[in-house]
Image 1: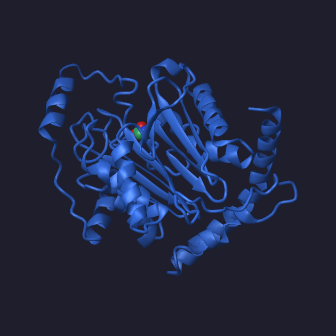
Image 2 (image 1 turned 135 degrees about the horizontal axis):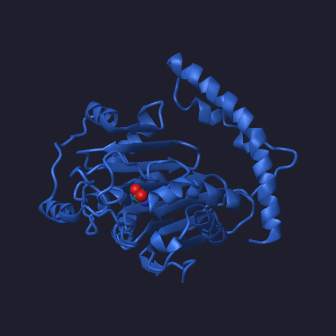
Length: 352
Ligand code: GLY
């Protein structure tokens, strides 16, 4: 990072403190409005992020739509996800439709057994799923610790579109799924997941393997030709995690964050390390302060390493995108790849 960038970020952080007060009053109005049965979307319309501030960094350029959409997804399973997303866009779908469609592809068929109902279970033998979806106007929906739902990403979208909430978890999220007519299947492992879990039970050693158990998420960013950006993430989290563990993926600002007219960022890897730093938010705020998407990813990964100790023991991969279609990609360790449109790309990494 350049020192100009560091100064700009310090300034931006000072501004954030001031703006936080206005946001608190917006949230307070929301609580009262919700209690009165008013429309859920009100607080976002009132959010003060676009208000000018005397010492704010220069306004970013306004969004001019690109001629072709951009779709990014984490890991090799991002290739079929991007194909699904591009199909949705070809059917005149929005960036939001694209990330939902892409995530659904991998939720149905994830050879890594790290997304969807075919995943490896937690240490007690239950597959528990997390997902989040966000649009660049500040709308967001998330589900955490849900069981028996084939498409948690679509449930997350329903939380965003049909409830006044952002995050539903566990039995409450499953109840909401049933209310929406979504089947909630009884807990069941696939034969392969059950075989691997029983093998794991022999030693019960909890030791996530970098780029294997951490190969754990499909996170996506899409920018459509109308200049709308959306982000999504869906995962079963770490294999053999403690029952009840929730990672970064369903937490807005940790696994996903997108904000017009700045850009978006998404994460994959060991969720605890991302949660401690709100990695995706960190990267977007770095872009707000002037960083390119690549600089933003490097900045966020450096912070993740600074907060989490020995980087040899975990992997985090991060992607960022701005409205000019510029892409950033960076990881803690070698081995993180991502799909950019129809291409698979190896990301650079801190540890080389
Ligand atoms: N990054 C996904 C998780 O840790 O659950």
